Image (cartoon, rainbow, N blue to C red; front, top):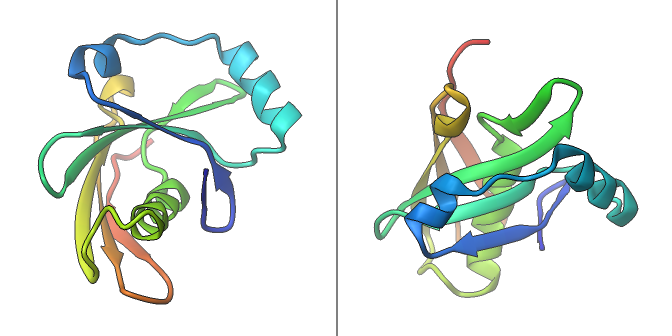
Length: 126
């Protein structure tokens, strides 16, 4: 579980084929989110390279099922990596997101040794 204002359950997959190919039932995910009180996305991550990750952020709200650029999830993930000592701080990672919904984005996450994680980057227009 990662937190930076909203709770984001985190799943890290190690197989790119599984990451690219999984499907989910939006109604079931929404029901689980409501039952658990998760206001943030369900974050599914794949490590692409040493400092590069790819995210799929499940967020079934109205017509949206996956969020193409989720700053709060990126900040939460940066804090999560720091908390589990998965990065030597200060650190910078990049997160690609949105490819699976046709709106690729690139988020840059700066992870200090202490204090707040910052996120910058780009996202495609609506």
